[in-house]
Length: 255
Image (cartoon, rainbow, N blue to C red; front, top):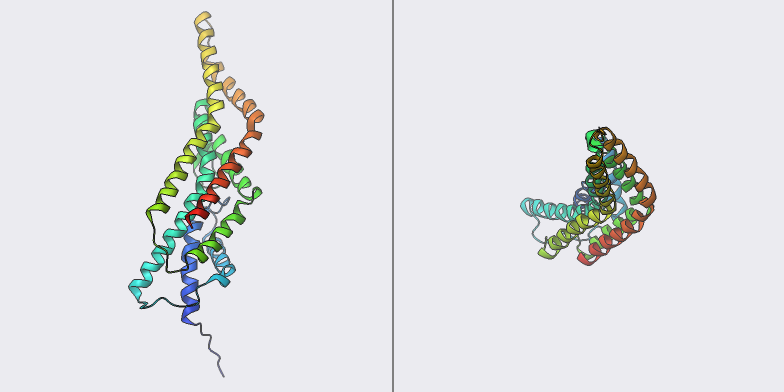
């Protein structure tokens, strides 16, 4: 006697809707090494998070459910997941913007290495910023806050009821603007130091024209950048924590 495994249509609908929301967010959430991990690993993580949110799956089907409406609902769930993931990804990009700004001025952009998170060529400071951002993401508990946002989103917008509003798009745009401003704030002390070094070397070269200062410029600026970063790196933590709290509170307000 053969048994048959059957699932109610409500359970299947809830699984697909929540999976679309989770998968959309995981496309941008800055998990270290997630973007270059094998496809089965990403699929298993999305399925695991979806199953973990099973108590919040919808208990009823929307009226007049058809194939076209099903596709529209899945698209809206992906839009909500992408919105959450993009907002969280701005946290990592804050450090990336800062590292890109002063890394180019310090001369590190002339030597690139392989970024372990994306597989692309990046300068050393950019790779370091990505690794530090991934560590801070877990050290400050942002991963747990993202799970709370998922749970709250399923309560505030049950699967099949979310439609992208101008207020949500405006919140994401403001977070992007905050990313750029915070990245410039982090990079500004290093930029000021490098400008003073360029001014000092220019004056020295003007006074001693026979000196070949070009060969000393790159190592001096690189060493000064590393030494100054070692001195002020402890100040990056409160700035990153404030940006993380602002991002999480903006997501809660949006929901």
